[in-house]
Image (cartoon, rainbow, N blue to C red; front, side, top):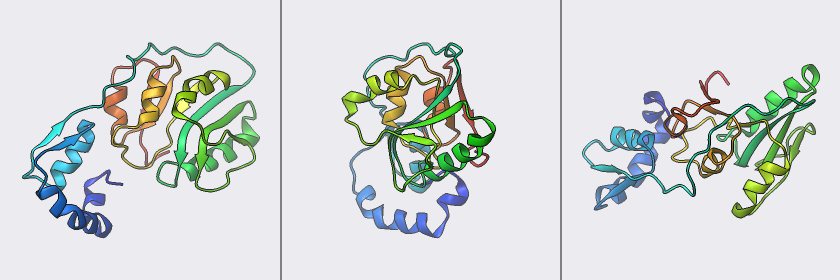
Length: 193
């Protein structure tokens, strides 16, 4: 979880850098799936030549548009959520919204590191090939990535980009560059989420 200069200089980050230093120093090439990850590696290992090599996406992005009006507004959250990927934030937001905006529903297509609020529909684990159909079946209106750390690429974002759904994501890691220029997509300050 390396998102800022302060975090890059934290005791935990320095221990991680030292632990991996020999491996990285001896690597002939280092590939980065995003510019954000390349930037982080360049800060930690400034003398290494980091090559940007994004993953080939399974398909091109589709044009996003707002969902048609209906009685409920379904917010989809994708993948496995630990604390850093936003499980606690999802629980906090869904809990706060439940009493004031009951028409807003939160659906986790995936699982969390702990049990979440009863007002969050948790689908559970799925196979990668099932995700596109699950997003359709749950009739999402928005895909939200509540991550609090820098995703190096985010495979579930690739699936989200193949939909026409609006996307809300934090301003860390690969999210800003991968969503750059996409209509109906918003980047928020992860510290303010």
